[in-house]
Structure formats: C-alpha cells, structure tokens
Length: 297
Figure (cartoon, rainbow, N blue to C red):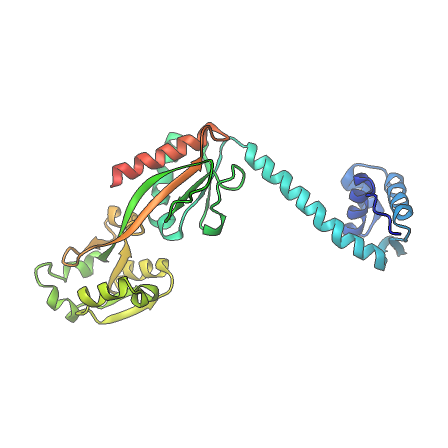
C-alpha cells in the first residue's frame, strides 16, 4: 500500500532547492542551513518515499527517475504557495489598488484620470488590467471593476459610471478640410476608418451604411487601439468610442465631426466590494472615478 502520509514541508523545501540547484551546498546557502542539515532532510525524505531521489554527479547531484517525478509535483506546489504568499503581500499593501477595465476605456478615459488620482493620493500604485475575464470582485484579485454590463454579484456594490457613444472624429488638419455644412463632399477628401466588428454588427453595420455611405472605406481594423492610432495619423474619419477618444479630444489631437450623428454605445458600470473595502484607498479611488465621470459627462 502506498504511503499517503505527507512528509515534512521542511524536507520538501530542502529537496526542491537541491533539485533546482543541483547541489546540496548551494541549497544550504539559499535556505541558510548547513549542508549536513540538507543531507539529513533528503535522507529522511528518501526513507519516507522508499526510493533514492538523487545520485552523485561530479561535485553535484542529479535526480533519479523517482526524484524527477517528485520534483515536478513539489516544484509546482511550492510555486503555488509562493504565489499565494505574494498575493497576500499585495493584498495587504495599502497603496495598491487593482482596477479591471475594458482596454478602449482604459486607454482613452481611465489613463488621464489616474493622473488626477495620483495628485490626490501621491502614494497610490494602481494595478490596471484589461483582462475582462478577471473582473470578479473578490477583495484579492480585483478591487474595482469597470464593465459594460452590471456584474450582479452578491456582496458587490455597483453603480452606473458613464454612457458611451460612437462618434465620428478626425485629426485636426483633416477635419479642417471637411465642411460641417456639406457632408456630401467629404467623400472627395477623406475615407472611413472603422472596426471590422462594427461593419458586421447587426446594430452598428446599418448605422454605418446609413450615415457614412458617402465615405469610401480607407482601412478596417480588428483592434480599436489601431483604429485610434490610424485616426491620429490623419488617415481618415474614424467611428470611435467617445470614451476611447476622450483624451485625444481634450488635448485637441482629434476633432469631433458634428456633421455625423452619434450612436449610443451602452452604459459602463463601476463595482467594488459592498461595505468597507480592504483598504480605505480602494473607496477613495472608487469615489474619485465616480466624481471624474460626473465631471466629464
């Protein structure tokens, strides 16, 4: 019958270090132990599993077949433990706040608001993620989530943040050549830049065909950040999220073309843990983003 009793964690840590470094002496130095202590731990572990785990190789050691099997499992397990400890350390850092946000919104609207938050909270270290699959509010991985739909999670406080819209924009030099009173001549002077998903969308596609039919297609992208970049370079008129274009519009590097109607693009929600968050700074950032959203609406 196999031995299902787990060996001492100290033995496993000594074994993992010796296996990774290929040397008892180096493992001892890393763990601040004597070489004889490492040798004793590994001897005890070999007695526990009933198999030799190392063989001598020059001045070092190499793993046996049994040792390689054990090292694969122990290495992964210790990495998970180290990762968990690192996450706890991050969780306890009162200056770190993790915000998950869709990439276009983070790129255009959130980034400049982080500058404002830093002025109010100089020691703030925001962790900004655009991985929308990691939006579950759990007080450890995600402090604040900005999402296109309410999360509807138990124990989560969420409120509307901003309403987005698709708007026509162009670089200032190009916009100056497109008279607002004569959109019918725009096609002679500019082309349309848009997203592939928008063109094929059952909702946005007809809107583009109705209002932008006079503009020949200049380029089609599958990433809104590439679309924004192309528009900033003056390559054409772009149909962009107002929130993604927010920073460029405020700086004047893009101009809105009012000859074309805006199309509502949904509401954004902001969420955090209900009640008191893990650190007061989380609530400060949450409330600050709400205030900035109200000011920019």
